[in-house]
Image 1 (cartoon, rainbow, N blue to C red):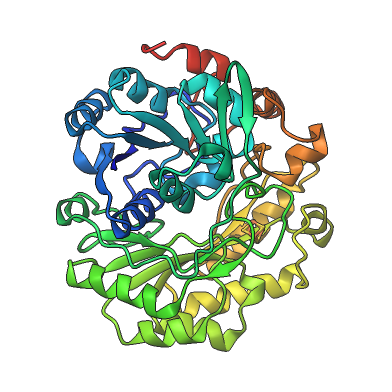
Image 2 (spheres, rainbow, N blue to C red):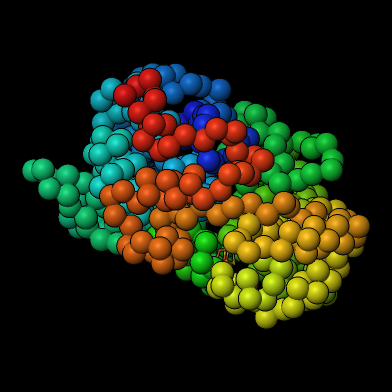
Length: 430
Ligand code: SF4
């Protein structure tokens, strides 16, 4: 089979999108390519930002390849599936330009994972994959009957067919990825690294997937949920390949980078720096020292609320006091040049307490963000507490709630986010 895998050319005008807008490696498509090629298929992998192509340009390249199947992601890489943009006009713009020239069209991503019917409807694709996608994409290429492949949604004779719930991949033995040299050259971005000029290309790598916790705001129920560790030898093979290609910084996209002595000790030896997101309450001081010695230069740690009651209401299951969390963050800062404590805006926040805590940490070199409001993603427990299981209006409902709740949005968002229907209708391709 000939398969095209596409990360479209993203644009987030008037979006509430929280994620970083720089180009990142499309890991889900990279794994898909590796599994397809292992099975003998021909693959064209395209990325709007890394190939410097518009959605129309991507469509022409796909059409020229004449694939039997075109797989399109609805969020810009696994790193951002938990905080995806709600709107789907960008993938739709690519599909409109493709105009039926890509064979069977398949959408993967957080939207179809949670709400398959509206994703099929909005995009007009043949299939939606629910959950982690690489293994399902490989099954599709085998030519297996659709009814025998789990985690698909499609229309048959006017009826919605859903072959199963969201898929969780085995993950542990996913092969080491390598990327086109020209992509790495176009990837100078060192994700979530601050206070220094990036030297050399950056890259994203996955050491683990999922998280054993279930914080109320965390949108991972339908993908990247259950915690799994990738084999250390495979991670190191991938990182060694990146180092050989000139990469000097990798960002571990793991939901939660947990203490892992074998990997950290192996990284001490290697000429690469890295960033992680984690929970500081799960790191003992000695392991934080090893993390710094291994080359970690950026930690993003979710503290969320400054009161134990607040953290409990978010189901953080955090056993540390706020003072102990601050002490542990300050300890990390001794060996890691950038440490950030994430805070979430909550009803009843004590503005004075937040201000003085931020000042205390800043004085010790730890950055704590101005608390940002939560978006009740349909894949989060918060959504389900508010409205039950996501239905076909789940994204619209979450969006309306979010826009109505706050008069001040995060400083990384557009000044004037639009209602979802307006944003999707405004696309010139519709
Ligand atoms: S610890 Fe982090 S990744 Fe895990 S559930 Fe909480 S917010 Fe999500």
